[in-house]
Structure formats: structure tokens, C-alpha cells
Image (cartoon, helix red, strand yellow):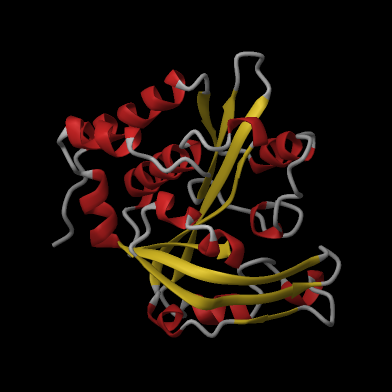
Length: 243
């Protein structure tokens, strides 16, 4: 039997991290209109273009199947972004979803360039099935890096994804340099494998060699349902200096 989500525990978890962001001068907002999100990120200096996975012109997201997070500073300027969506992979797996390019385009036949390719060599990607929460587009403005905001944002995203979907898996793709610098530890993903996505999207000017990082649904539940506020506050205060 599926365990019931305790909304009070989720709200306590989110409150800790929302308060932590506020203490660093950031006001967090959450939205579901991805046309609005793309307009915001497209007008944000220094941020790279949002991947097609989160752009309605290439991969529309049905109501209830996605959300985004932004954080603004005291001048109401964008300081951080993040996005998440739910994939129904009950008849497939994450490796197949990547390699078919359906993780990036709702209709690869229509939108993919003939030379677009994605190889997934991470063995565990084939085991990531069912309701899969995919997180991406995490960005922190340079003057706010080194303050633990990546960890705070990732934690908020974990809490929201759990509350909305209670997924079977939660996963992300991260650049190799993030692994090399130890930045991924802030995302509190317990598993990681190289070869998550060797990706070439010609018209997007994307050439990636990303790692796959993930949590099982039960591990996500255990993260969010930690009820010890002192423990959560300690986790925030002990964030690494880099983002």
C-alpha cells in the first residue's frame, strides 16, 4: 500500500530551506507556467539558454507535471533558477527516454536535427522507471555562488517534487566539471554514474558529457520526512563554500 504523504512534515522541511534562502537575501517563488519561466530565464543576463526539456516550444509540460523555482535578490533581480518535470516511464526507462531524444523533444521527428544524438552508458539508467521526476536548469548568479544556495534550491525542489508526485525516482544530469569540483554533493543525490548523457543537439549548440545522479523514491521520502529541525538547520549551515 502506498504510504500517505504527511503535508505537515513536508511544510516543515520546506520552511527550513525557505528561511535559509531569506537569510541569504533571496526570496523564493514557485511557478508552473513554463512560457513565463522561459521569458524570465531568457531575459536573465549570464544564464545560458534553458534546455528544450523545459521549453514549451519543444517539450510542452502538462498541467501538474512540472514546476519551476526562481529566487530574487533585494532589488528583485533574478539570482537563481531551477526546474523540474515528471516523466511517465512506466513502459520505458530513463536510458531509452534519453536515447530516443524524447527527454528533450516531445516530437523528435519534428524538432530534432538529423545529427542530434544522445547515448546513455550509465547502467542504472535502465532501472530508472515508473514516475520519474527530472530536475534541471539549476543556475545561481555568480555573486551569490559560494553561499550554499545550490544546496538550498535543490532541497526545496526535492521537497516540492515529493509533495506533488511522490515519484519512484528523482534524477538529474550534471556536467563532469561539477563532479570534478565536488559541487554535486550539495544536491544530496545518493547515487551517481558517468555516461549519463553523451548529448549533441546541433541547433541548440549543446555538446554535453553528463553524469547521471539520482535518488529512489524511498530515499527521497526519507530525506524530506526528516522531522528534526535542528538536523536540517545544521545541514544548511554546513553547506560547502562552493556552488
